[in-house]
Structure formats: structure tokens, C-alpha cells
Image 1: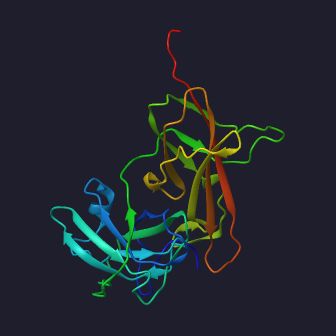
Image 2 (image 1 turned 60 degrees about the vertical axis):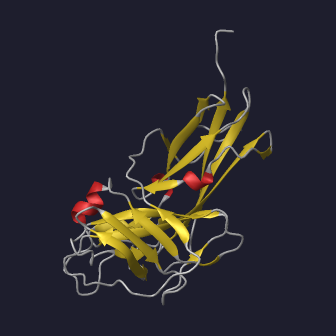
Image 3 (image 1 turned 180 degrees about the vertical axis):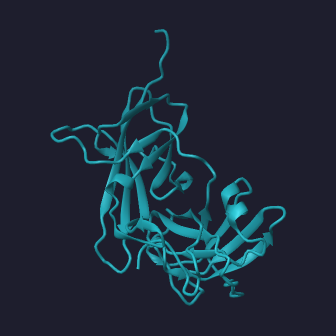
Amino acid sequence: MMAWLQLTGSTEPFKARFPIAVDASSLGGSADKDVTVTFPKTLDLFWTTLGSDGHDLRITDADGFTVIEHKRTTFDYANRSLTIDILGDAGNVKWQAQQSSIAWLWAYVGDDDAGDSAVSTSPSGQLTGRVTAEAAAEVIRVSDPTPDRGEPDNRRSKSSGERRAYWFDFSPGLRIAQRAYSERLNFEEINFVEVSSVSAGSSSSIEVETSTRFAGNALVRVVVAGGSDGTDHTLIVKATTITPNDSTFQILEGRLLIQVRDQDDA
């Protein structure tokens, strides 16, 4: 089994999938959790691929193939309105959110053979999941650091009053399958990420963790704000991976040096 979903009995795999960023940053301990997600009207590929009855929607764990039950809370195809509850606690298939993290789930659409799998079970204590239509920009490619170098290879600058978004691309570190499954080589996926920052060896908390979003197969957006003029900060984005039917995961780290400078003519 590889990481792109194809239902038993379906003639083709799903046409498209979209990552869901689940905010578990305030979760004090790992636990099975339900999740509420509203899909944005501006996510055009989602709406043009989803069937007009919404029956072909499937939600999976970060591994890309473990299906988790969902309930349709609101649905209006013509007006592009859809909110669902993902039943990671109330459903039959449990999904565990890791404490102090932003977790990754998948929403699949585009299977003409898929019947309606939505259930009527009521959720409780839901976390919030978010899907973005934003395209990645200001991308930092995560790769092995330069040997014998103390500071991060990548650096950016901002003023103390700016709020900036940076995308981290973890694809160079993700392993792929030996052979295609469901017409794709996806194998290793991001399971969850943890975001932090340090300055002069101490936590600086310039990250806005609740604004973390996902895109594509391995893109993570992190927002930073604040910081005092003249200070340097290391933004750390740690991604823990998952693979199908295999306990061998990786922990990948993207690091970015952010220099806060309020430039002026003086």
C-alpha cells in the first residue's frame, strides 16, 4: 500500500487531494480528536473536481490511505459551501493529534465510482482544521545544512513591525516508492509539524503557530511577527514523517535565520 488513495472497486485513483492543517498547538497531551473543517470558496480545483453531490469526498490520515469517517455539517455545491466534522474520536477509525503540533490530514476528491461515505455521528471537542488556496511564495528549500557552518544557510530580514509568511519545502527529504502505485510515487508524507524560534539561545516566540498552513505534498507555511530591532532569531520548523505500513519515520528540520532590522537614513 502506498500513499495515494484508491478505493477498493474503483477503476481509478482519486484525481486530487488537499492538505488540511489541524491546529493542535494548544493541546496539552496527545489524544484522539474530532476536527471541524470549512473548505474555502476560492479553492477552485477542489470545487471543480468534487462531485455535485459531495459523495466522493474522503478524509485520510497523514499516511494518505487510512480513511477517517466524516460528517457533512453544511453543504451547498452551487454556492461552494462545505463544512465537515472529521470523526477522529467519535468515529470507528481513531485519529490521534500530537500535542503542541500542527497535524496533517488529507481531503481527497474526484472518484466517480465512490459512493457516499458521510455518517451522522455527532462530534465533540473539535479541533480546527484549515485548508488554504494560497500558492507558495518566498520558499525555503529544506535540505542538509552546510557542514561546519554554525548559522542557518537560509536567512531573511524584516522590520520589527512586519508580519511575514515563509514557506518551507520538505520534499527533498521525503522518500518515494520503488514503483508507482495509483499512478504515483508518493510514499513518505509529513505527519505533523512543530514550530518554534530562538534568539541568543532562548525562546523568542516570534512564530504565529496558529497561522501555519500546508500546500502541495510537502509545503509548510509559517508566519512570524514582532522581534526587537537589531535582534537575530532562528525559526525552526520540525516535521515528523509517516510511511504506509512502516514504523520508520524521519524528523526533518527547516531552519531560517531572521534578522530584525528597522532601517532608516540614520
